[in-house]
Image (cartoon, rainbow, N blue to C red; front, side):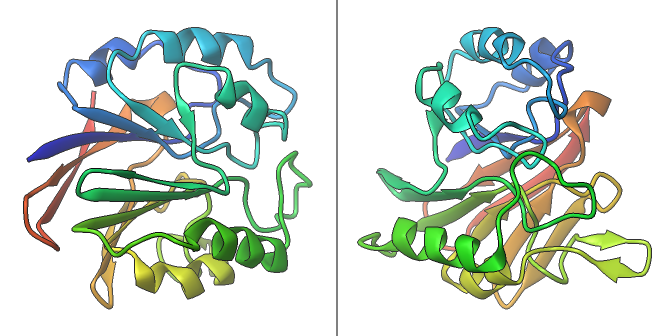
Length: 214
């Protein structure tokens, strides 16, 4: 069994970190938006230093593109455009988001997202648990803004190869959905104290997700 704490959308507010860590995770996943646009990343580095279990992260659309480099030098492991295997778990990551109306710092075209994910997945094996860590949600799933669906069509295309998708980005469409055997979770913004605990069992598809507030 493994307990994974999933956070997203901190937006420069890290005061609830100790409360999150009191949930006693074995691993932490952060699905982007450490900062607000033009916000400094140094406080996030300090926050990451306080996490005493393995931490894996991607930047969000509000983070600068340099966040990838910051993460490489941090206490966390950057998953943007890469993959890794941890025993029975394979992790693949894609940061930023598909285009928004706001011109935020880290936006990618759908073609770029498709290319990055294709390269990141190359050579990965089908593991007991296969997790995609992304900031933007898959199109049509936890991506509603008013009457519009604003998620990524490329992430939707690639998610069928995963058992679990950890995303964020859309603050008001948090939740847990299952699409064709893939569980998608957006825990909601961490700056509001929201998070998810994912419990992975020893067998494929043994995945339990609980959304919590601290």
